[in-house]
Amino acid sequence: MHFPQVLQFDTLIIGSGLAGLSLALKLADQRKVAVITKKSLLEGASARAQGGIATVLSREDSLAEHIQDTMTAGAGLCDPTTTRYVVEHGKAAIDWLIAQGVPFTRDASTDTGYHLTREGGHSHRRIIHAADATGMAVQETLAAKAQAHPNITLLEYHIAIDLITGNKLGHHDNRCYGAYALNSQNGEISTIAARDTILASGGAGKVYLYTTNPDTATGDGIAMGWRAGCRVANMEFIQFHPTCLYHPHAKSFLISEAVRGEGGILKLPDGTRFMPWHDERAELAPRDIVARAIDFEMKKRGLDCVYLDISHRPAAFLQEHFPTIYAYCMALGIDIAQQPIPVVPAAHYTCGGVVTDLHGRADVDNLYAIGETSHTGLHGANRLASNSLLECMVFAEAAARDILDKPRGTSIALPQWDESRVTDADEEIIIAHNWAELRRFMWDYVGIVRTTKRLQRAQHRIQLLHEEINEYYTNFHVTADLLELRNLVLSAELIVQSALSRHESRGLHYSKDYPYTLPQALPTVLTPPTYTSRQK
Image (cartoon, rainbow, N blue to C red; front, side, top):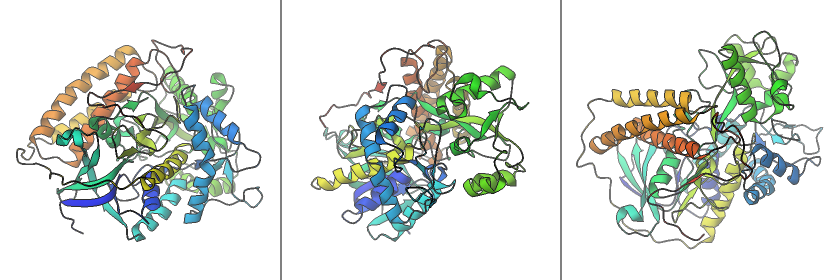
């Protein structure tokens, strides 16, 4: 389908993950909505989520305990008001998904009627799931509804270039009017005007060499928000998932935390269990502790990987609870009912992001950020397992209510994208080379364990890449690869800047130069040069 270059909607949603699709469906009965997504509708991180959604559903559980588990995992940096708000609105979010037809795994023997699993850092079984492919089950359900809704326009293979703001237009009104977007299939650039714009494009995991994230996770929303004048917070807290499958033919395949929740044991190559040496909670310690323990043992012993062993559970149990993992490993010649799974840590989740309030509102009027792109204060210094999809749902509802409750703003005529002074690039190899260099030195210098010297080396390299990319962006036609690299380098800069400013070790940020934890926990808030304060 061909679209004209100037498009007008009530609401523009950048990203088609759980946050974006949920918001679209909640608005579409009363608003004309556009959802743009870089690839196909289901290629984001949400569809890869295996474990499930953390919510208090059982009578044996309590809101207070879920709040406490979240705060404990967050190492003192979770915002108490946000944490309570999200936990208290969790059941309503699950009820909405059930009403949409999401096929969560049932269990007639429980007081909820659904099977609840347990993951690291949780004091109860509270993870509702659809076998071991919860994200895909949720996304397929919502995508089908979005595709059928007459008020939702889905623009696949469109990558947002930048937000259109009053400041950039010379109006100096600190308001967002929409965005420019590149159709990566035909090179056409559209001007998309909207009364409200939502950044829901996920995290920045692809800034690292090894990640569980899809190729789409290039920090686009965070970078666009920063360039538009939004504050960004806690970018130093990159969660490394402890157990990514280690195999030459496995790209970014995650071994769910639920495997450890159901009794999986981490072992050295000789079969020795090592997690009790590092934490009394062993395999069920929070992710930051487990990832650091694996990293320590691998570096100490020169190992390529460690092993996650759940072969003591019956094959029938594993096939029922982990059908996707079981089948994927079996296809690679690993029978998880008979042998341990080789695993390594990999970048998994961006705990920081664009600063928002409890309505999902960012620092620019009519601009929202939800999901992994945002910093709500829920995750603190380390996200509790399965709180991410919960946050997507709760803030999609909060943003929808805020958008529907306010009067519709007026729209203005927006200028089209100006390509009059650029040419086709002559050396696209520069982009591929810079991308590879960035991901390698971020892994080596800004990984699970950091030092000030490593961070400074990374900062120096990032500055050189910035200069090359900005020159490229100024002189040549934009491409999807160039846009992603531009956003990745900016995301990397924000991560390093945040890490250098934290003179302690807390949660996911561990510095050899500052191994202690300070008595007062404070967020790292970065302010762009174009930031304009406003009352919310």
